[in-house]
Structure formats: structure tokens, C-alpha cells
Length: 87
Image 1 (cartoon, helix red, strand yellow):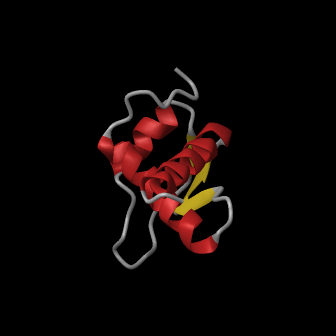
Image 2 (cartoon, one colour; image 1 turned 180 degrees about the vertical axis):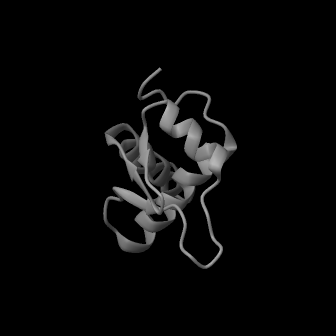
Image 3 (cartoon, one colour; image 1 turned 90 degrees about the horizontal axis):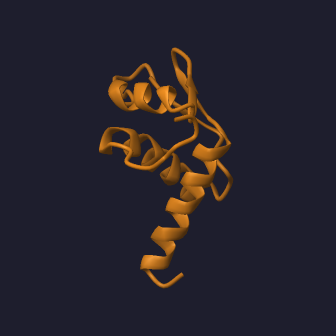
């Protein structure tokens, strides 16, 4: 099931949503996001595990590296958001 985004849980999608936020703010393609920021904010552990099991990300102690399919999915999410507001 490597690189499969079909049927992702909301917990997994929340990680992509966080990446999409950073994509919108920075204007640049996002290749990684913070897993734990040391201030109490943390990516959902079940979501991280799901994405890892599907081969979409590689997670370390503090960072989550997005693979090519994950990056493309974030780009598609951003395009869908823009499309919803006529951009």
C-alpha cells in the first residue's frame, strides 16, 4: 500500500493540513513539518503512524519528512482550497 492516499483518516489528513497551512503562508513547496515543537504542540501520533505505514512520510523524533506523493497531495489540497474561493 506504499504511496496510497486513498481513504486516509482525519488524523493523517491533519498532518497534511498543517503542511498545507505552511505552503499557503510561505508560498513554497513544503518538504517537512515539525512533529514536536517542544512547546506542547505535537502531530497526532496515530496520523503519523498511518502515514509512515503507507510509505508517505518518514518521521523522526521532532520532524516529519514528506515523500513525493505526500508533497503532491499537499499541493493538491492547496489547489482545492484555492479553487473553492475562485482562485
